[in-house]
Amino acid sequence: MNRAVTALRIIDTGVKPARWNVAATAALIELHRIGATPDTIRFHRYPRSVVIARGQKLEREVDVERCRRDGVEIARRMTGGAAAYMSPGTLVWDIVAGRARFGDSLDDVTLRVGGAVAAGLRRLGFAAKAGARGAVEIEGRKVSESDGRLDGPTAIVQGTMLVDFDYDEMMRLLKARPDTTKPVAPIASLADCLGRAPPIEDVRDAIMVEFNDIWDGASVTSDLRTDELALADKLLADEIGRDDFVMGTPAS
Image (cartoon, rainbow, N blue to C red; front, top):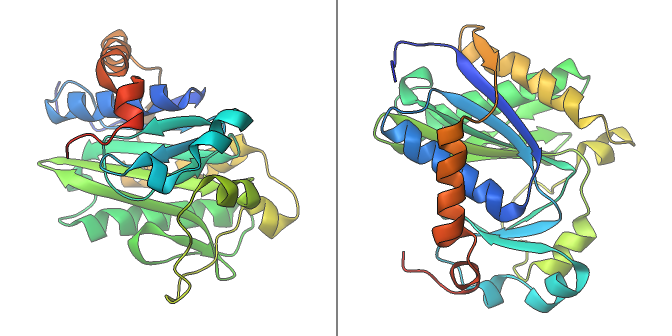
């Protein structure tokens, strides 16, 4: 793949099963690392799900029996971090791109992404401000966050926007509780801030306008390629989709 190509590829895979979403993310990262996939942002959404980190113990983080009873999917991602509750009202994005577009450090990357997300929300009339480490707040409440890592020349950023969110269900499903001893902004959805949920497509499009600035306005909309889908399916079958991977504690 020619790294001189500057256009950002935009993909929206909609609502897909939780484990497939994890596998698709892993496939894009693996292929971009070897130069086989161009700079890409994939928007996607999850059914009602909990997604835990690579090295977490499932039973410590999640009420597994409640998930099974309530039809909530469980997946394990390949990266670290905290357990997360997902639903169709949460807009999720993966950015897999050359780090030179963002800056020299992870702080540079998350600052630019958070700034673009906040600017997109301001296009929709929200008084959004970008904070540290990719967080975006509206009137002191966190509605979005982004985090990532650098892997050689590749920047990997994963972010979420709470468009419509069931806080009570999250608290029922996840065992970890917020650390109230630290000055952390409470979370809220755009529906909480507006009184109704804006169309999720409008939120995606407004954010995308600002992301385009990072790529000098050059972008192209497409679908996942055949080789990307094949690798996602392989990762799903070999590991990510297997119950013994999700339910156990894989070696880090």
